[in-house]
Image (tube, one colour):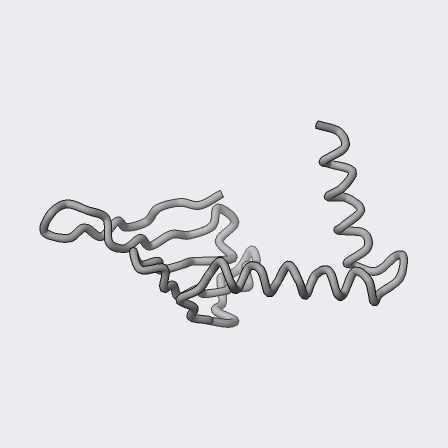
Amino acid sequence: MWIIKTQHKNEDGATVALELESEDGQFDVNVRWDGCMEVHVYSVTEENRELHDTFHTCDVKGFIEKLQSLNGVCAEFFGEGSYWKEKNNNKSDDKNES
């Protein structure tokens, strides 16, 4: 899912940062050893790749938890046929198949 474009090391040879890109080209990320990261979100078409948004966080785990919580609220609020119900139903179907 991720391609490591560059690996930055300190004088002791330990990895201190990574530059990654998603296989589909929609994201590239600069990640540091301390948990801080900058995420670039792109719109990818056949013709080009255009930067649409950038965000910075030093708590990716907390950010993911917030997004999962938001997903849960939206799944409860919006009815059948909505994006959230369809996505959540597909995920539970995938888990039941394993």
